[in-house]
Image (tube, rainbow, N blue to C red; front, side, top):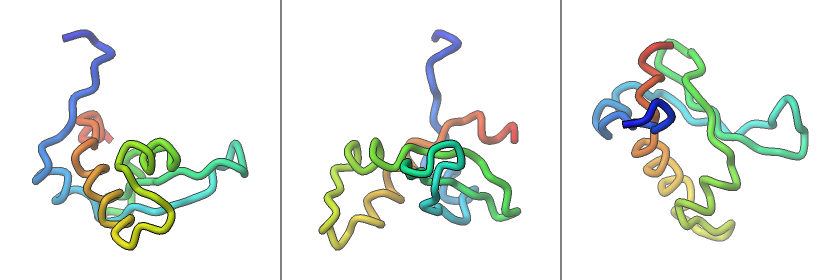
Length: 85
């Protein structure tokens, strides 16, 4: 495995670790939205590009299950390096 290959946490571990996922403004680009992932200790674990997650999770703006799909996507794609934070 190359150093740049991302490994993801098992789903169950991600669910245990994550307390909240917040849609926020990118402080470096006010026109860009991100999804910030927080632990139960209120520590920022990582963030995801909002548009990329919406696209990759197959969520449309009108999707009533959009939030649930985004959460599931993130829980399956939480990088293992968040354990080092």
